[in-house]
Image (tube, rainbow, N blue to C red):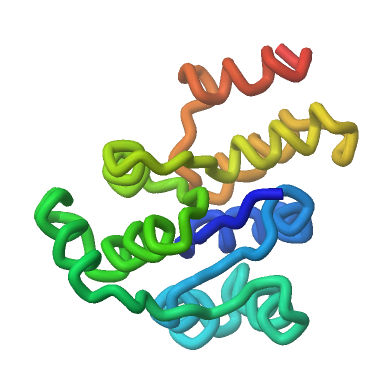
Length: 170
Protein backbone atom coordinates (compact mmCIF):
# COMPACT_ATOMS: atom_id res chain seq x y z
CA UNK A 1 0.00 0.00 0.00
CA UNK A 2 1.22 3.50 -0.79
CA UNK A 3 1.58 6.37 1.62
CA UNK A 4 -0.03 9.68 0.68
CA UNK A 5 0.18 13.30 1.71
CA UNK A 6 -3.13 15.15 1.56
CA UNK A 7 -4.04 18.77 1.23
CA UNK A 8 -7.35 20.00 2.62
CA UNK A 9 -9.43 19.55 -0.56
CA UNK A 10 -10.00 15.78 -0.65
CA UNK A 11 -10.43 15.64 3.14
CA UNK A 12 -13.28 18.14 2.85
CA UNK A 13 -14.75 16.87 -0.43
CA UNK A 14 -14.83 13.22 0.55
CA UNK A 15 -16.37 14.20 3.90
CA UNK A 16 -19.05 16.15 2.01
CA UNK A 17 -20.23 12.94 0.35
CA UNK A 18 -19.73 10.77 3.42
CA UNK A 19 -16.77 8.90 1.94
CA UNK A 20 -13.69 10.06 3.87
CA UNK A 21 -13.40 6.51 5.27
CA UNK A 22 -12.28 5.40 1.79
CA UNK A 23 -8.89 7.07 2.17
CA UNK A 24 -7.17 4.47 4.38
CA UNK A 25 -8.37 1.77 2.00
CA UNK A 26 -6.08 3.19 -0.69
CA UNK A 27 -3.25 4.84 1.25
CA UNK A 28 -1.49 4.26 4.54
CA UNK A 29 -0.23 6.23 6.20
CA UNK A 30 -2.07 9.38 5.21
CA UNK A 31 0.03 12.36 6.19
CA UNK A 32 -0.84 16.05 6.51
CA UNK A 33 1.13 19.12 7.48
CA UNK A 34 -0.04 20.93 10.64
CA UNK A 35 -1.38 23.80 8.53
CA UNK A 36 -3.81 21.46 6.75
CA UNK A 37 -5.11 20.30 10.11
CA UNK A 38 -5.55 23.94 11.13
CA UNK A 39 -7.37 24.79 7.87
CA UNK A 40 -9.80 21.90 8.11
CA UNK A 41 -10.31 21.38 11.83
CA UNK A 42 -9.56 24.68 13.58
CA UNK A 43 -10.53 27.30 10.99
CA UNK A 44 -13.15 24.97 9.50
CA UNK A 45 -14.81 24.07 12.79
CA UNK A 46 -18.41 23.05 12.15
CA UNK A 47 -17.81 22.64 8.41
CA UNK A 48 -17.56 19.39 6.40
CA UNK A 49 -14.35 17.51 7.11
CA UNK A 50 -13.54 19.12 10.46
CA UNK A 51 -14.99 16.47 12.72
CA UNK A 52 -13.97 13.65 10.36
CA UNK A 53 -10.33 14.77 10.16
CA UNK A 54 -10.07 15.31 13.91
CA UNK A 55 -11.40 11.77 14.47
CA UNK A 56 -9.07 10.30 11.82
CA UNK A 57 -6.07 11.96 13.48
CA UNK A 58 -7.15 10.78 16.91
CA UNK A 59 -7.51 7.22 15.55
CA UNK A 60 -4.07 7.41 13.91
CA UNK A 61 -5.48 6.98 10.40
CA UNK A 62 -4.14 10.42 9.49
CA UNK A 63 -0.82 11.58 10.91
CA UNK A 64 0.42 15.15 11.23
CA UNK A 65 4.00 15.66 10.07
CA UNK A 66 6.30 18.62 9.60
CA UNK A 67 8.64 18.91 6.63
CA UNK A 68 12.11 18.27 8.03
CA UNK A 69 14.22 19.38 5.04
CA UNK A 70 13.81 23.16 4.90
CA UNK A 71 15.86 23.34 1.70
CA UNK A 72 13.29 21.11 0.04
CA UNK A 73 10.60 23.68 0.85
CA UNK A 74 12.75 26.37 -0.82
CA UNK A 75 13.27 24.20 -3.93
CA UNK A 76 9.54 23.49 -4.23
CA UNK A 77 8.74 27.19 -3.72
CA UNK A 78 11.11 28.10 -6.58
CA UNK A 79 9.42 25.59 -8.89
CA UNK A 80 5.90 26.69 -7.99
CA UNK A 81 3.75 29.43 -9.51
CA UNK A 82 3.64 32.59 -7.37
CA UNK A 83 -0.07 32.06 -6.72
CA UNK A 84 0.52 28.85 -4.76
CA UNK A 85 0.17 29.22 -1.00
CA UNK A 86 2.87 28.33 1.51
CA UNK A 87 0.65 25.48 2.72
CA UNK A 88 0.44 24.05 -0.80
CA UNK A 89 4.23 24.25 -1.14
CA UNK A 90 4.67 22.44 2.19
CA UNK A 91 2.21 19.71 1.18
CA UNK A 92 4.18 19.02 -2.02
CA UNK A 93 7.50 19.19 -0.12
CA UNK A 94 6.24 16.68 2.47
CA UNK A 95 5.10 14.30 -0.28
CA UNK A 96 8.55 14.55 -1.88
CA UNK A 97 10.33 14.09 1.44
CA UNK A 98 8.21 11.06 2.36
CA UNK A 99 8.32 9.66 -1.20
CA UNK A 100 4.53 9.54 -1.04
CA UNK A 101 1.70 10.09 -3.47
CA UNK A 102 -0.11 13.42 -3.33
CA UNK A 103 -3.82 13.59 -2.61
CA UNK A 104 -5.15 16.89 -3.98
CA UNK A 105 -7.98 18.33 -6.04
CA UNK A 106 -6.21 21.63 -6.76
CA UNK A 107 -5.06 21.84 -10.39
CA UNK A 108 -2.02 24.06 -9.66
CA UNK A 109 -0.87 21.82 -6.80
CA UNK A 110 -1.36 18.73 -8.93
CA UNK A 111 0.63 20.25 -11.82
CA UNK A 112 3.49 21.19 -9.49
CA UNK A 113 3.50 17.72 -7.93
CA UNK A 114 3.58 15.93 -11.29
CA UNK A 115 6.43 18.25 -12.33
CA UNK A 116 8.30 17.10 -9.24
CA UNK A 117 7.80 13.44 -10.15
CA UNK A 118 5.01 12.66 -7.70
CA UNK A 119 1.99 10.50 -8.41
CA UNK A 120 -1.28 12.32 -7.78
CA UNK A 121 -4.85 11.31 -7.07
CA UNK A 122 -7.86 13.41 -6.17
CA UNK A 123 -11.36 12.94 -4.81
CA UNK A 124 -12.76 11.83 -8.17
CA UNK A 125 -9.95 9.28 -8.51
CA UNK A 126 -10.56 7.86 -5.03
CA UNK A 127 -14.30 7.59 -5.68
CA UNK A 128 -13.68 6.00 -9.08
CA UNK A 129 -11.35 3.40 -7.58
CA UNK A 130 -13.89 2.66 -4.86
CA UNK A 131 -16.62 2.13 -7.47
CA UNK A 132 -14.39 -0.14 -9.57
CA UNK A 133 -13.55 -2.14 -6.44
CA UNK A 134 -17.26 -2.48 -5.59
CA UNK A 135 -16.85 -0.56 -2.33
CA UNK A 136 -19.47 2.03 -3.29
CA UNK A 137 -22.59 1.11 -5.28
CA UNK A 138 -22.53 4.07 -7.68
CA UNK A 139 -20.21 6.91 -8.66
CA UNK A 140 -22.46 9.35 -10.50
CA UNK A 141 -24.67 10.30 -7.52
CA UNK A 142 -21.57 11.13 -5.47
CA UNK A 143 -20.08 13.22 -8.28
CA UNK A 144 -23.42 15.03 -8.65
CA UNK A 145 -23.46 15.67 -4.91
CA UNK A 146 -19.94 17.14 -5.13
CA UNK A 147 -20.99 19.38 -8.02
CA UNK A 148 -24.09 20.53 -6.09
CA UNK A 149 -21.89 21.42 -3.10
CA UNK A 150 -19.71 23.72 -5.23
CA UNK A 151 -16.89 21.32 -6.15
CA UNK A 152 -15.26 22.52 -9.36
CA UNK A 153 -16.30 19.68 -11.64
CA UNK A 154 -18.23 20.17 -14.85
CA UNK A 155 -20.76 17.35 -15.38
CA UNK A 156 -20.23 17.81 -19.12
CA UNK A 157 -16.44 18.04 -18.79
CA UNK A 158 -13.82 15.42 -19.51
CA UNK A 159 -12.95 14.45 -15.91
CA UNK A 160 -16.59 13.78 -14.97
CA UNK A 161 -17.41 12.02 -18.24
CA UNK A 162 -14.24 9.88 -18.18
CA UNK A 163 -14.96 8.81 -14.60
CA UNK A 164 -18.57 7.74 -15.18
CA UNK A 165 -17.63 6.07 -18.46
CA UNK A 166 -14.78 4.18 -16.76
CA UNK A 167 -17.16 2.67 -14.20
CA UNK A 168 -19.92 1.98 -16.75
CA UNK A 169 -22.33 4.67 -15.58
CA UNK A 170 -22.23 6.93 -18.65
